[in-house]
Length: 247
Ligand code: SF4
Ligand code: SF4
Image (cartoon, rainbow, N blue to C red; front, side):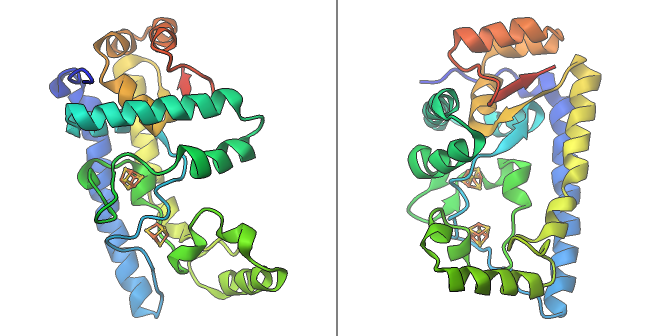
């Protein structure tokens, strides 16, 4: 059973900055989506749609603290097991493209996904990337492996469809303004970590969520001890430059 997380109150100033950002983002994204739909735009995301939940996710430790505090021991253990698979992939993938491809194909779906309902079991505590990913084309285009199965003609159709769909960046089918709207959350997290700890910690979602529950890691971070925090992560078998950045 994974250990209980350090007291949430201890890191309140950091997590509160992120939670305020989440609330502001939800209001702004709702407003944007309402206007988009009024103009005829369509977003395909909805309850039970989860083809994107096998993508690698980068977070700040501030966001990971929010998720870590919401997990019970069993969920935390599943997250840690997933983090160890992510670490194995980071250590063995020869390049970034392979890392992403293997993450989707071999590491697989997020352990916080409820496979029966297709819903997120930690919806209220999910990180920024899970909040700001919206698709302007059907979910089959989000699923791993779809692109590889398309014919040349289907790829050309996709490119034309994306180019004429308002809200995309013209190259991919995700809704670009809804990603840009989340930038203040990243900035608020960076500011709060820097102010509170004198350093920032960024990296893989499942790795940081696991480390955020470790008293020894959080104690080093809270002291601004980047080297000590890295050593704790290394001894725990959770340190690799692809999944953990401290500084
Ligand atoms: S981004 Fe794609 S897979 Fe994810 S919820 Fe939206 S439509 Fe579904
Ligand atoms: S945290 Fe929730 S929304 Fe995000 S990848 Fe995991 S299951 Fe999907």
